[in-house]
Image (cartoon, rainbow, N blue to C red):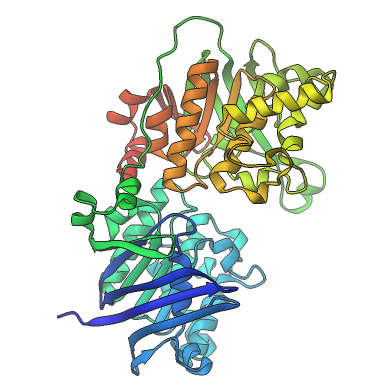
Length: 532
């Protein structure tokens, strides 16, 4: 019979007098899997961090009663020394981005062993032996070797597994998992979920998972808590809440799955982008004396054949390391290549002066608009930057008019944002920044947009809005898209044709509906099943 492990009552969190968590109540039973759901800014991560008092300069009030190994305690009232004893031992946390959560100066083995030494008092040899076993339990291959690896020497999935091993080192009663799969490819997400599910059953711990991924909630949790603007708007069993949502915000989250609204463009016309036997490689150092005189080569894309007609979207899907981003960089003329690659009838020469015309016809929208937009430039300077290169004879007034027109096309105007042209990127939300990035690409009137994970950094409702914008722009302008993503739902909503890449090769290609509904290659089936 289960008993209440965590009881949160009237939790309030404020920064500088402004409340961001506003009097919430929820409970977690022993051995229960609960999902805390909401978009960025809803307060879900702040809620989790406040339980362990990991927030800097925050005013936290309320009561959080936890049944620890030493009896019931109020986490918010504990002295710091006693709370440190609970952190990592009774309550552990998996952070969202393992590359920033792990210390780059120490091996993963040293970092996990340190937890065992500090929390359980194990001698170092025993702690290291236990660390190897923990890495093996989380499915990391060759744990005896990987225990001596630094974080940068592991893949994204392996780093996340190492974080899980560290969190589970002391067999905690409660695991706080903050977006544990958000930075991972779809197949890796499934593997991490299966891993957490198996470890949760084996150790009998409770899991409070913080996420905005509703597919993850359906697959993992038994109960869901929905947060909006610092308040809980709905909670209950996953099956009931998803089948019969009561609150409008919950309904909007559930209805935020990308919707296909793509016209079938007329056939004919030369392709905007065409590749034949495309191969892209990177120079790699050779070991020993050989590395003094020559380099080896890592082939990231080999033998790729594809074409994109006018007004079409070609989706490229695959896991990290599959070669899809390298393919995009070659299409943009940013990497040398072998084979044939024709862009709107021309090809990249590698010489900026000669490639300027092609550069106007091919533009890019990157994954993270916050890092791709200069924080030092105003909106007018960012969006109008391409005009200074490709249309330098425009007057200042003509350039400003073109900038305003491009912004209006993506749904940004002075009526919404007074002083819009003189604002800076940090003054906008993630979705608004991505609209700025799209306007910057559109202003030079390209024929092809390379979309590199254009919505993966956005919340689900904002993702849907940006995809609808891209669909409308394609219909109105006849744009072609090269869409790079690991999200099968985005491919279904946007693409006409799809390439599936694995290990630098195209393993399957074809019309999107036929390929995703009846995949023939085992790898494609894995990707589609993981996204279900």
